[in-house]
Image (cartoon, rainbow, N blue to C red):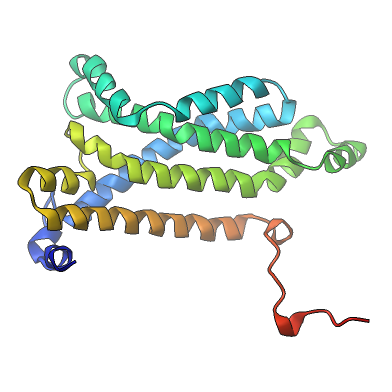
Length: 237
């Protein structure tokens, strides 16, 4: 632990384009780009599948198949295929984004699909009985009820992407993974441990932000019930 604190306390590691703040910014930028792209595809697709009931078998097989893809192997294959066809930083950044995109898709897609699919059928029938159209039922009833599972999928994908984005450094992409790769090359174990600690802290911080957003966005009636304390227990009649 002394090596970690010594590395973190060194002012030189907090300055310049290779410093901790710059690496954190790069890591968050890559992760945010991947999550936005994955959510833009997976959330609408999951909502449509959950609302219509079509393609359920396909989505289950696709999700399971994508989860079994080896991230590092796919990254190297993508670099070999795409790098000769691209220029500059995009030759390595594009394969990393594609691989992380495929990693983020399954939990987001599964969360959106399951959230809508598990809405109480009685609630849907009541909404239709009030004269609501299919689209109105989706936006006014199903999506609000599905928000807890949608956020659960987004939070799961976020943690996976932030943690796995470190492998992008193995193909000359920036981010916090540089501390692990460069530290391993130089046998600087303080740098490696410090980089791993920073990745964990960043992941926890981002997850905390998502938790706050979820608390604001989700209706109180859909939140998990708070267990009663002893002094709040209902007295027996």
